[in-house]
Length: 266
Image 1 (cartoon, rainbow, N blue to C red):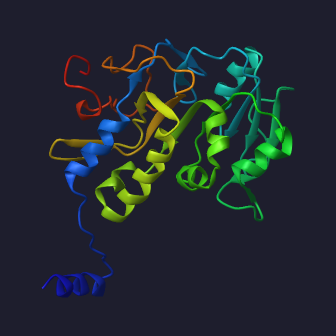
Image 2 (image 1 turned 45 degrees about the vertical axis):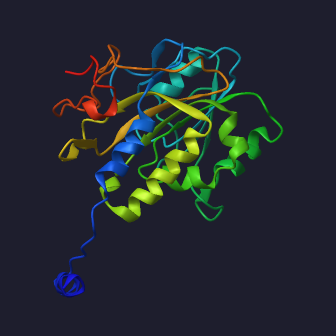
C-alpha cells in the first residue's frame, strides 16, 4: 500500500518522504542549546542584518575568513576597526560594498572542491596563511552551501577558529529523515570542537512547527571553541538584549524548545 501511494504521488510530480522521529530532532536540539561559557557577548557589525553576537574574546586574533559578501560588510568593517583583517570571497559580486586596506577579496564561491568559480576553505586559507597556526574567526553566510564546506573542512582547520558565526539554511528539513542525517552529522562535527553560545533566528524566513518542535528555517549560530571556554552553563536569556531583527518582517525569537524550560523567552 505504501509503495502504491508513493507511485501515485510520483505520477503527479510529487515525492513523499517520511518524517524524522521527533525524539531524534529534540535530541539534536538539546545538544545545540546555547551555553554561557564565561564570556560576555558583544555585537559586531550593524544593529540589524549584517551584525552578529560573538564572545568578547578577540585578543590576539589577526584574521577573519568571511565567505559570502552580498550587500553588506558591516561585520568585517567593525572587525577592521578593531585591528582584524578579513579575507572575503563571493563569486556573485565583484567587490565588497566597503573598500578597505584590511580587506582581501576573492571572486570565488567557497565549496567542497576546487573547480571553476569555487575553492575549498582549506585552499583559501593556504593561499594567504599556509603556515599560520594562530586562532582565526569564521563568519559564513553562503545560502545553504555551509554544509558542504563544513563537511569538507579538515578537523585541524576547524579547530583553528576560535569563534565561528554560521548562518544555517533549510533547517526545517530536519523533519525529513534523509536530510536529518546530513544536517545532524554536520552539527555533530562542529560540536566536537565548539560550544554553541548564541542562536538568532533570521525573521525573514519564517519557521516550521510539528507539535512541540519549532524550528526557524534560517538561524545564525555562534560557536565558541572549547579550548577557550569556561565551564558551560545553560543560557536562558532569549532574546538577548543585543539581538535585532534581520528584516522588517514579524519578529521571530528563539523557540522555547531550544533552551531549558526555566525562565527566558517571551
